[in-house]
Image (cartoon, rainbow, N blue to C red; front, side, top):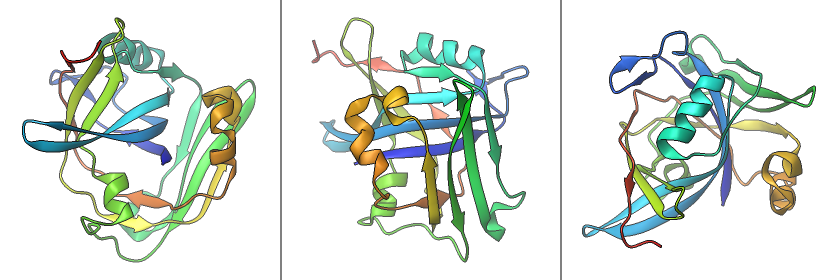
Length: 200
């Protein structure tokens, strides 16, 4: 399973220091899901295929710190002022003079999904994995409280899939989505990446 995810960074900081002029911005990413057994537990994580942000400084910092596949492009978003009231959320990005977007509507009451549900599988991952410059694997922990989610309706995705992600994703991302969710979000902490010694 792969997911296209849009969200907002709010009050962003690195090592506790606010990012001047870069505290509020959007991100849209394409991710897939992995797991690793370590220290007697199963760590559920995500790996990113492409991450879009509107700030060049942010993209450069993420590449340097985590070697993550960030790209800076013009972006915009439409988010209700009070997410709990429901409505429509849209994240858009501009590539080669063409605006592309993801969007969904949501209504009713949000709730923390059951542990064995697809909503939990999508929203509750607390590890990230990527490739270091030497080809080894990087692992970093992500901390946040469980998120309440709404089941989304009327999901939309328009984008140059082959141009953004490669031809191997065209079939999957051109089909109707298996599911759509809106999450309320929360403060999130991303810890320093560590190189896994048992990888090449």
